[in-house]
Length: 113
Ligand SMILES: CC(C)(COP(=O)(O)OP(=O)(O)OC[C@H]1O[C@@H](n2cnc3c(N)ncnc32)[C@H](O)[C@@H]1OP(=O)(O)O)[C@@H](O)C(=O)NCCC(=O)NCCS
Image 1 (cartoon, rainbow, N blue to C red):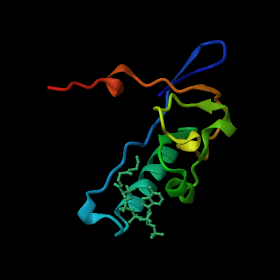
Image 2 (cartoon, rainbow, N blue to C red):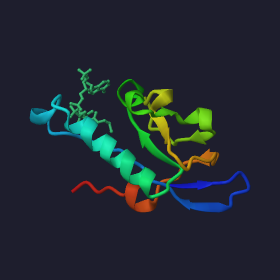
Image 3 (cartoon, rainbow, N blue to C red):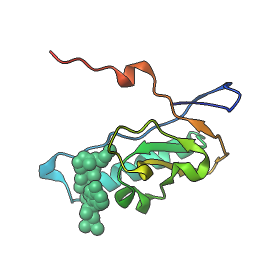
Image 4 (cartoon, rainbow, N blue to C red):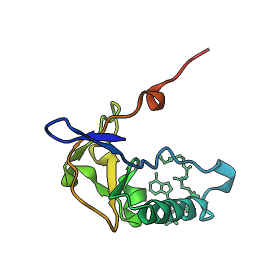
């Protein structure tokens, strides 16, 4: 994700976790939690300041994700999404980078055939 500074100077891309899904027949066996823990470790080791996602606060808070708004980060959430769905996991190299998340065009591309 690209987050512009208030002066609209680009500061580069940041890791984004969602969407994440486990096949229904394999849910509630720890696969989702293991994936999230591994991804958090990998982006932390890579030196990212934080990890972003859109998802249920009830699920992701247990992995250290927080409402991104308290870090000054705003998401372009779809209609009907809970206000706290935009989340941020601070990492070891955390620094405050306030702004609005903008998805790359490929992330938004979809076709119906
Ligand atoms: C969310 C998801 C990835 C979790 O994967 P999983 O392998 O089932 O997760 P785990 O087995 O590691 O953990 C299951 C725990 O998550 C909880 N959980 C699952 N979905 C939840 C949600 N939307 N809100 C709150 N808790 C949730 C379960 O109740 C369970 O809690 P418990 O262990 O206290 O009983 C999986 O349920 C899924 O693919 N759901 C459909 C897609 C989706 O909603 N993705 C998230 C948005 S990106």
